Amino acid sequence: MITYNQAFDYYHAIYRMIRILTNYRHTEFVELDRIRIWDFYLLFPEQVHTITLKQDEKEIRQLRKNFIRKDNPYNKLIDSKKVFERLRPYQLTALHCLASYGIINKSLLAENRISIISKELLSEYESKFEPLTPTEQNVVTIMVNHFYKLSMFGPDGLKSRTKLMVSRYD
Image 1 (tube, rainbow, N blue to C red):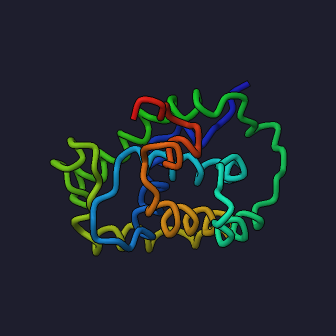
Image 2: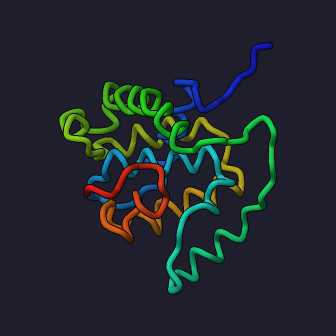
């Protein structure tokens, strides 16, 4: 039996990257690993509950309550780290595709940083999509508005909190 999984679809990866970048309203660059982590949670929103939060992050806790934990047997993750690493080539291909269209800076992408150079072109592509579902909108809001401030490194960094990447040696 052949099954479709949107996680391993190059076109869906491009769609997700466009969605994330459209909602990223800050002017500075964003790290490649950060975008990859955001993409993982956009793809698997039920995994937002696995992110370690501090006591004073009440606003994020409130947003996270909007996610209903439902076990979909067709979308169940046994090992999120392995799935995250399997996503890497799809995510990188999507970002290189956006760079070839002139949406993000190609030279910064080579340095593992993403910077939007054409908001107009990005908006043009995004306007062809249907609106985000409430779950997708919540994930994007949490990631782009709250987790962009977090450091990637250290015991309170995004890598350590999500446990998707090794952070011990950072």
